[in-house]
Amino acid sequence: MKFKAAKIFFLSASVLVLSACSEVDTDSAHAEAVKEWLKAGQTSQAAAISAVNEYMADDGLFYRPRYVGFGFTYDNTDESGRMIVETIVPGSPASEVLEVGDEFKSVRGIDVTPENRDSGKLSFRGAPGEEVAAVIERGEETIFVRVKRGKIESTISKADMIEWMSSGDGSDWGAESYTFNEVITDGDVAYAWTTVANKDDVSGQLVESHVVTRFVFNEAGKVVATGSMREDRFELEQQGYSVTR
Image (cartoon, helix red, strand yellow):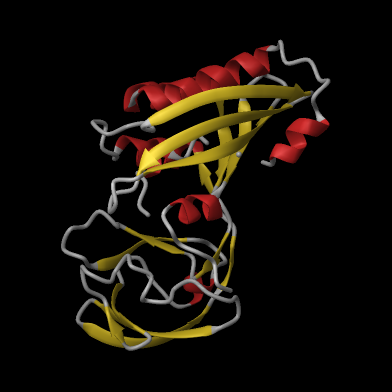
């Protein structure tokens, strides 16, 4: 399933945390900032960027969802079907082998094509520690590489996030459906529970997900950290997929 990144990046932590903090006063400046931040993220590209500029500290960080893989990104909107390394997570398995600009030609003997690039057939995901063989092109050189999957954790700076947001498609911004359910604050931390729904690009089916977002504020009332957790497995199950291992 492909969701536009802009539809999910605002949306972090666990519903269990909400229950634990149920008696904490939510009528605060932090709660209002969170509400405005999330609302702006669903309104428009310009509003989303403005909210980050207004509410986030200059040294603030966005925490990406963790996953098992190599630790690189590529442009999955490239209609040519090519897989060219755009960014590499520092300290990841990819950082020891790949360089920005490398182009994957095959993975585990399967050619990278427009049909299979994003289908899951290339086996980038799987158990950590397992070695995956691939062929890349670096300039005019063809290179055979082996990369062991690892647990990937990474952050994005405020400046990099704004640059990334600015490069997105402003005509298709925000979720198909968005509901703000609750925000709870506890000192310098706030948790927001939202519900979003987006259409799957392939099937056109509306897929719903609960999202919990965690915000950490500094003494000046600016966000210094935020990250998201959502119902990834439930999203797949709504489309008829199942997790077999």
